[in-house]
Amino acid sequence: MQHSAANYRTVLFDLDGTLTDPVEGITRSIQYTLEKFGKPVPPQTLLNSWIGPDLVGSFMTYFQTQDEALGKQAVAIFRERFGTIGLFENKVYPGIPELLAALQAAGCKLLLATGKPTVYAEQILTHFELRPYFTLVGGTFLDGRLTTNKGELLGTLLPQLSAEERAACVMVGDREHDVYGAKAHGIPSIAVTYGYGSAEELAACEPTFTATSVAELRTLLLRGLA
Image (cartoon, rainbow, N blue to C red):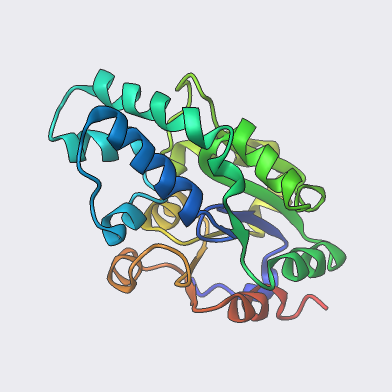
């Protein structure tokens, strides 16, 4: 089925790499963690690739271990810094506040679907004055009750929508797990290439649409809604 962006009146947004650029806060907090473990800090390009996926798995891969407890210990140390400093070392992508305002004015329902703990996501949205645009904020729990799997996360948000809202929704994100999460629930997706997913990664997961800039994303989402 060919989807039309003009039909999307419910928009699920990822946070990191989609609405905001969290590179400084996340990578500095990863560096803090690795230094606590006495591990060398990898190149910035590798650190950047950790933005989006499950951090427990990323730390386990870097430590070359199957010990999940060690990965969770690393995330706990990461949060020592991120939870107080790192979450505010963040920048809203230019044009995002205007896009959210325009979507809201056009009658769209906006939801946040992030692998970040909800408590952090709420603080970030409030700090950058984006919270009023969102009807629902869906994230994970600090105690690990909900994983960062985007399909699982969407499974907690979509049942809160009416059948009409669900039929007109789209997932917007910058990594393959955003696209695959949407596909798991049979909903279309828009992959943004200005975030942290490589062109190869995003092409391989075959999103419904691709936006190379916030301006292009705006065109896709607002087409026909004015």
